[in-house]
Amino acid sequence: AQSVTQPDIHITVSEGASLELRCNYSYGATPYLFWYVQSPGQGLQLLLKYFSGDTLVQGIKGFEAEFKRSQSSFNLRKPSVHWSDAAEYFCAVASSGSARQLTFGSGTQLTVLP
Amino acid sequence: DAGVIQSPRHEVTEMGQEVTLRCKPISGHNSLFWYRQTMMRGLELLIYFNNNVPIDDSGMPEDRFSAKMPNASFSTLKIQPSEPRDSAVYFCASSLLGGSNTEAFFGQGTRLTVV
Image 1 (cartoon, rainbow over the protein chains, first blue to last red):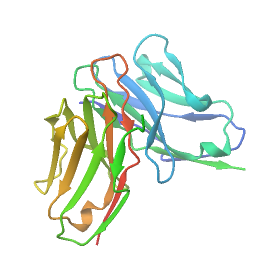
Image 2: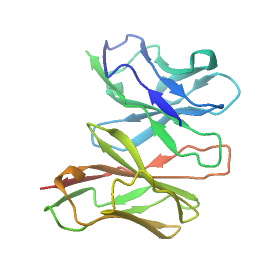
Image 3: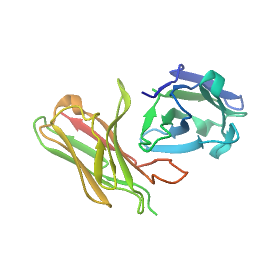
Image 4: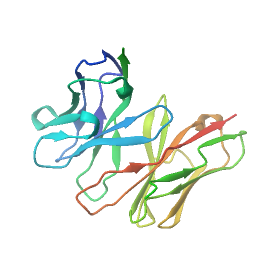
């Protein structure tokens, strides 16, 4: 069965600082990987996704993530955080088979200090 | 497209009452998912449909929960009878399986409170 681990429950950074959110997955084959962001009271918005090809993927709002098969990781990065980035971030994995349902990590809450 | 539409946005009900949550997926999508989000358990997949057919309902917590998808543009999640521990945010998502883009688009959720 597929699973996702986000080891950091809560991260605090200062505005303008760089950010890295960690994500490790478990899946037997090549996974489909996603990062979603959830603002308070809102649904989940897709930031970026990895299916195949270039292991460094670019997303919206200046985010990027790198797929590292050897480490089973898909960490999310942003070089300079803005106050509006404060939200909860979810990493998710989907099987490459026909099912495609998403399994989510437990989320990382990001606080941005002025 | 307006995206995935869920109704109501908020629902407060008394224990024992029947609750029905509604979802309209994105037009043209062939898969629909119901998720539940709680502080304790995070985001859990309850059930998903492909071409209106339930494929996997192993995440449905118990017989009090049921889901239907009578057509490609509408789905319901029903809880009968409701209990306080059902209080959560319920999300509906849809996607287009079979293509190279498998991303799921989420609705804004229904916040259910059972008192």
